[in-house]
Image (cartoon, rainbow, N blue to C red):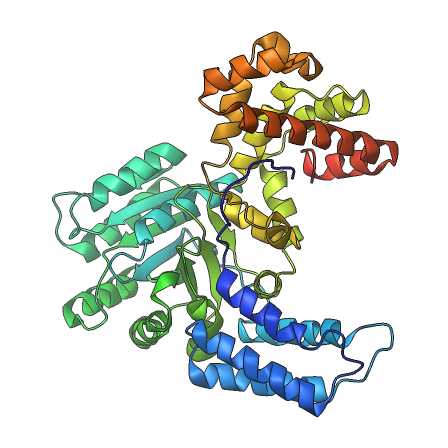
Length: 455
């Protein structure tokens, strides 16, 4: 992915924790071997980093003890540096602590009923829409049920989301009997041969016994195939404590962490599986309906350690990439005729993949390579403004853009001539890189996989 834009430093998922872990492991780089002394210092720094990330003390201690024991028992591999060996050990232990393997939701049933639970403000309604959209894209027939009768506009919000994603929403705005609404929704789903029914419930406080009794009654009435506990990842260790209370009452099947694109320290994601013994199944990474990911413990461990997550990146690209468009771009690159219209087309492809901050975190080493460049959902606006200030002839023929044309373009988009010149140079450098990679035969293979240039 080639992005040319000078902004401030990007915030990515677990950035603070990632930076601190990276500094801790760096103490082993340059060491001839793993020893008691250098391991003790590194483990101490890792434990401090975890505690700063709001990981429970016992969890942090258990994890670092396992890392230390595994590292000291590790046989030395001559061809691998101590830093690389230790990084793998940390990644393996983080993966194990977060559950080890991806756990699917249960969609068996006639229909399968997925019951959403969680605190007020955790993002249940929005996530219900995201999950419905994702399941629909997999060819499933999905319906949403509006069972939050307490929050003002909750039913309207779910109906709006349903309209956006093309999923039917069952609602009875005047019925204040939540259990009856849920049962009626289930009966309607069966009658209309719906395969998956997602029930959105009211947010509740864990200490509110009346509300907790109510959702327990809904569970008993509809006998869900899957109960998901939705929690705001930004609440940190409090999220784990709340999860314990809900689990005692509902015995839920899995956890959803929302708002992972926020300034979260990561404590909830690292602690919740270990302490509640229920798997994280999904994460929410933004407000858009596409901002949902299945949770893979190994991939998340790699992201935390700055190793990227190329598999998730490829999966996102495959969801949005147009084979015919990719073939057309391939031809343009081979002929060295990639122009600004093609560039805008590729920017739009990237935007469809989701939050740009997440994409950066999925590319190994990219966040460090970008340095002080900030990438957010508005990152591409200045680039688009520059290109859209060009004439159609200029967009199709970048080499024709003279200094006088650049001055006119700068005035048209509200940028300085310096910014336009910098963008033009970066675009020219990108085309040179494409030409070089195409000559080596690498670009053809990349484009075939990703459907976009510069990845």
